[in-house]
Image 1: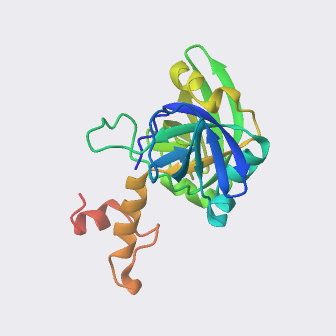
Image 2: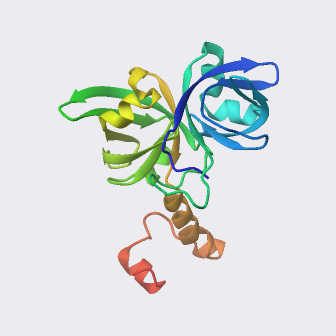
Length: 216
């Protein structure tokens, strides 16, 4: 589990057995979990200048790691959360839900406006104003979104912009996206707990429906 607070930036490279990350993240041990651009990877080998991790074809297919490793791109890094750590961001699992595309970057007086669109708009149902979302492993707050959540925008403060790979991002590039765990668990509870015939549809979930089931 992670918080989405990036602690270092590393260089990603493809190697015969997975990927290699060159970084000065700090002390690591074999078996440690590290979020690499929001993807949870396990340290398989310690190197003098970083670590190596095995990566499954499933992970490569669902994230930007394959493209990043091929180009030697910079990546955001965060070691796994310890139970004694402060939860400064939000709960991030490191399991990417889908890919997004940066549709606009705009400099504003005290921040940068970053606009992102899900490649699969169906994931937009997990996005709402002031919700949390992880973009390349960075915990960010949604400033606004389209009605269906398929496109959303974020006000990125200078500390986050300069301390992560966002500073080098360009319009049209793809990013790893992970929706808020709380939104996904809530949906599962509302939809999965009932018998199949009684499971609610999006249209049937109303304030009255929630109140009848103790949610209000």
